[in-house]
Length: 475
Image 1 (cartoon, helix red, strand yellow):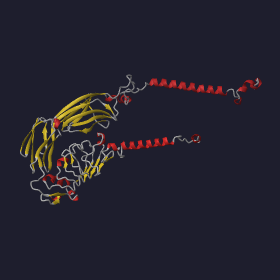
Image 2 (cartoon, rainbow, N blue to C red):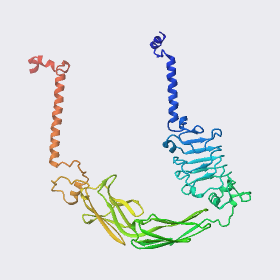
Image 3 (cartoon, rainbow, N blue to C red):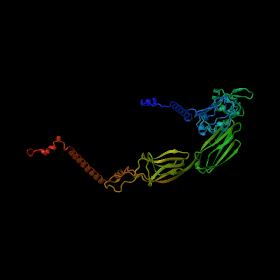
Image 4 (spheres, one colour):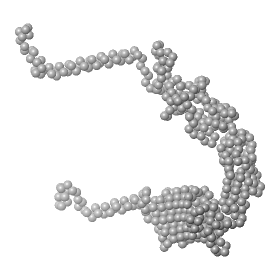
């Protein structure tokens, strides 16, 4: 009864408040669950995160020493792990190594902290899949050595190694060279053979030198099809490994003897123009590289000339290879195209050996239709290609006999393809006459309607005209 009265007053109450309460609780629980598994910063559902850790969509934190971990935690799916940008591990007495595949799925990892744990070993392939890693904190662990090759493909901006029992060895010399003054800021120390500790920044070791590599000649300019030879000399202690790196199309052979090597290239291909050739020397202390760009001279080659396309302007696209840069000239139906602000050659992109652009035309008409020829040339040769371009239909076949020369051209100007053509003058006069007659007829029709509507109203003096005596009219 009370429920009915409440309804009559305009407020609707549930006759079963306990069910309503359970419904609200269910809604709240579902909302919290949605936040847990949704995007953003809310925490992940408990079952998606290993029990010793706390996880959000972008962060994993494992700091509980009671329920420790021995390796990096794995989430339920690869997609979840790819979203992680920060991993924080601390106080883990069973955590001793970072192996090849431990961080394989954390492709977007940027910040990694493993501190106050028992980390002893880091694999050389530990971060092979973590190219976005920028911050690394390995403070207060059990690392005695760390190879520079672990980080060769990374761009780490900050590294903390304080509190590790690093040996004063040649293998750790790279840390001193890489950190520079930051080694003193961190008060980074290493353990000498006698057990004493010294600042890493003051480490001096015999037979421990950063390698060097020297490539000769340092600059090469050679014609396509010719042969050439490069030499690389290395130095350093321990004796470095000499490595060539050259992704070339051209055939080559390598002859190495001791700390020097010769690279012989035969029948140079223009496809290798601007390709990088590098010679590097690597040892336990680090690496050094010497490189050059191949400057291969070759005649022009028009690799693409396409049909005209309409964008903000009309464009005839082209791609031209050549070194030095070819000059480009256009012809329309064998007549030279004079370039100005309405027609001009534009280069939009330059790659290793090609120039990509278009002949740009601003508001072309039927006068610009025809066969376009592109001629590209430099001091080593010439190439040409043709393409038919159609921008606009010609006007109607019948011409005004009074229009000649430039007047005729301006009369036809700016008529779009498939657009309406101009009407002949006599058709225009006929249209004006018809429109005038229709207007007069419509105005007369309006007057007739007014007479019929108000003719029976006596106050206008029209209805009474029928009863006026003849005498009055005669006067």
